[in-house]
Length: 297
Image (cartoon, rainbow, N blue to C red; front, side, top):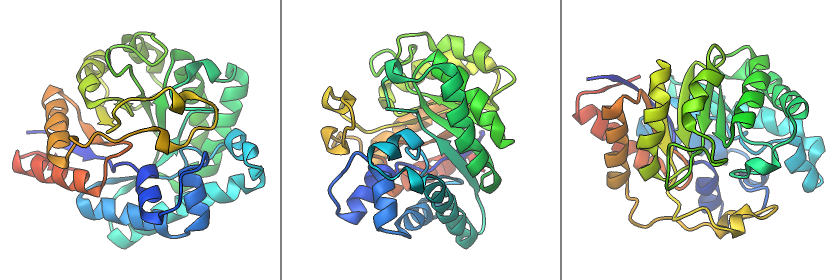
């Protein structure tokens, strides 16, 4: 049996559900502003469920996103708050690592909107430098193209922390990024710059093909899928809200764990959940990993 790092699950939808507030384009950032301490509570529940890593609520904290809402002046404060809430949950739990999330600039799943490399590197590096001192590693999430991967890897290095690169893939063909480019080109691009390669925020059914393309890199690899029916056209418009997406009612903790145990059998050393997964999904995954004799670390 293997040693598996267990990530947490979705943060954004969990915050929206718990807050009771209507979704906004600022999504989990707005909830963090309006309900201080709620992010810490979600982190605490994931640690209690068995997760060994808390992913900071910094995915969407970028100057461009805040500027659209007229609150760019809150940029550094929001990054500090997100890291602080994750660290507080880890301190209360007593163990665990903190992954500093860096999400895509401009928009998720839309590689055509990604800024030119010099601009992107500078903006990713600014986030990395600010969150780096408070985290154990940098997790570059939902990377949708090779150009995005190249820029975020260069920018994330500014944190002086290990960097994990996680890509989002086509829901019907997990061997391709959302850009249509082959996932198999990632290992060469990430060589010497990433300490782990993952796939995230894509259909669970797509992850096996993504892992097939990532595992030859010889690095720790993993997957954490979402529970959406599909990425809708409405969500791909400017400034979307999460109510443009629908959860898959059949994606129960038990079914999700079936997928994740398949990834582990395939060679994944890191698993967890993305959007629309909950502490219940992580708890069931932890239970199944333990039942099958894997060591969670």
